[in-house]
Image 1 (cartoon, rainbow, N blue to C red):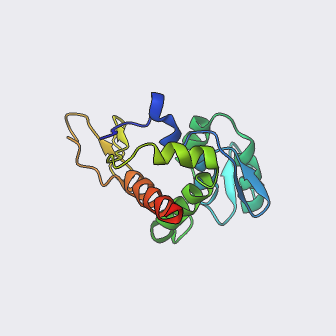
Image 2 (cartoon, rainbow, N blue to C red; image 1 turned 90 degrees about the horizontal axis):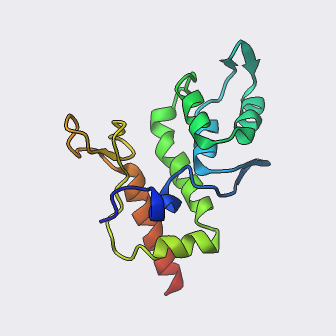
Length: 157
């Protein structure tokens, strides 16, 4: 089992640098793309209103991905976010793994279970291993990664 996406396994993280292009905007990571998709109306950030497209351009230029994640906590989410978030994540991940070098890294994980282990209580996309949470997360990111890994394997057959 691969139970964290750091060090040797950092390429599995949404913070890993890769090119995600969507509607003419180039995002430097899946995290950037994912956060940009969270909105579909005006956003007030640091006293400035942004249209959705201006917001997406802004997000695409922010470094590092951890800063983008901080901004995401302050957003007014699109109305249908809970219904759409998995589709957005899967699309971003599929774009990431179109890069042959990164897809080879994913294939190198073999049949290992991929678990986005964390200590920050993300029990939707990962599984928090703190005493309070006790590894009870849904691990949706890990499941999507394993699904994409299978799709890549099947294309190579």
